[in-house]
Length: 591
Image 1 (cartoon, helix red, strand yellow):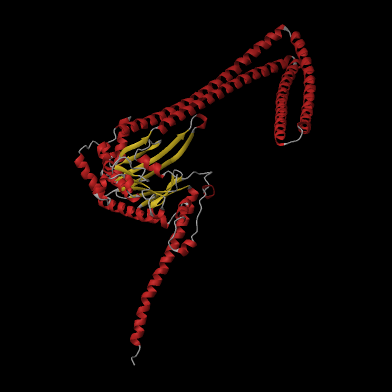
Image 2 (cartoon, rainbow, N blue to C red):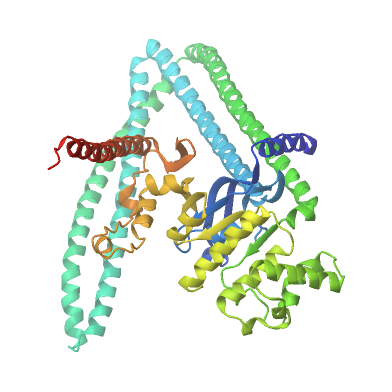
């Protein structure tokens, strides 16, 4: 079982290597629970996202606060145990969740057992119905035989049977009416008590007056309901008395008629009744056997499906546990993270040297002199001098502390870095310095970066591709230029409209788009999926929205083509004008 999964893993790994993909996220789910029992809540921080990051690129993950960006980054680097899905780095599965697989087994088992119980209950009811039908058929056959020799007795028995059914049905209806009446009276009494309590608390008047006034109000309703029920009860008693008398008469007629039957006729009737009963019972038994066989077949299919699902999920769980047990730590060291808040991510009781070389010591590199040398090299790479190694974090500015955090990540010689909003806590001027530093390090060291941010202007400058997240889902994914040129999802348009413009006139006339998912989408009939609308351009949409987006792209392309043609015509006109002026000057005679 595990070997089969390992062969699939090797094939998938080769696919990632061939496509030059360094990180692959597949169906990642990260849920958090809080509370216990009835107060237990589950928050879906990340809900089924998938994406690939190619070697050497900067992949941007943007969205508003609490959309799941940071949770995604921390799940990738194993700071969280993921609920479900898998994370592959250089073809190796480094993080995966089996809780979802275990819950799938549990839920499917519960649903199957419930369905089996329901089927058995239905089968039991059907068998009971068949047996009742059998008894009724035997009675009908007996009356048909009896009608040949004694029509009056047969007619009396038929009338008695029909009358007994009518009496029972009428009794059932009256029982329901009686229950409904008692419920209404109980509700009215409760409403009476509630109103007396509320009025007594709010009013300063005499309570006796209030009670009398409210009693008068509800007594009328109770009286009307009581009269209505009494009328129905009297009608029921009258009809029941009438039918009871008729039942007694019929029973007397039947008793007398059965006494007067000749013994020979009784034996003949009994013999015919036995033959018919045997035939009808055989038909009933055959029908019951068919019902049992059909039910057993359905139950067997349900159990087989359950067994297949359990087997598949257990195979996945076994492979996940195997992969997690045999993770190569050298692979994990090639992934590092830069945190959002530089002061909170640095231990105030440790010097810069101890902070930066902590990762080396964890990996067993105990040579102090060699580690110090690597610390100095890391500091120089991020633009800090070696003298800073002996200082503490509180002695530095925000930008310097973030450079220390970057140096701590670089000392492990990573190939992939998760930058979790590394500039959001910094001044605007310092942000540009840090972004330029990351750009230089990317070119110098060949880094691949997952850049998490909510500032789209920064992401546009720094990232090659961008994924837009909203409430745990990726709603749009494409290249940076394409996203700003052809934003399709309403949420992406809302984010882009929030970017301030440096031109005062443009900023004054900037149209702000507000996103409301309840009015922007209609997912009652078809749920959305992440679909590719253009090469490399993915958007979360259903079929109706995809058609609308394609039409929107066609209109934008048509508009862009018209603008390009107008620009070409303008340039051509500017090129022709100097030539015309030169010719006119050449033809003009000199004085």
